[in-house]
Image (cartoon, rainbow, N blue to C red; front, side):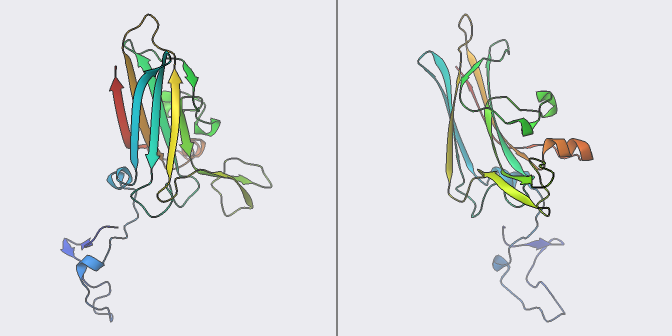
Length: 211
């Protein structure tokens, strides 16, 4: 919530002028605009990544640190979540076989990756997951229904999460291209498609390696 707040091109000093509002220091009036801002998201945490060859395997280590906010990431609606994608390819663009590390769950989408369906790919998802008690819909964003908490691995304030991924080296040798991408998704993909909402994933961080 940056300050000062700019309203109609000027620094805001009074939130209720003419209606008993008082004049205030503009540096003390913080912007409460709650729109999804890509730059704000990119500045909400720190992602570190490294890629090496260990024991004959391509090993990728990723660390996320919620060091720049005072609350969970993501926050608010249980529909919102983070998707960490780890891609390993040879020089011809062919994917390397994953031999270790977590994979993305089914609710990240079981269709084509080009359409944003990432289930089964190397990576990790961060979300507060609810299940409806009567219908057993899972995961559900309908927190107004009777639900139960299944899991919550969102990044709390100042929390750190680390994950490691291993891949078979390129057949016949050659270089390896690694891309680590952290995405912010505003709703579960099945709901996005059902409602035909236009809400593209936002890239929060990306690291690339070639070795």
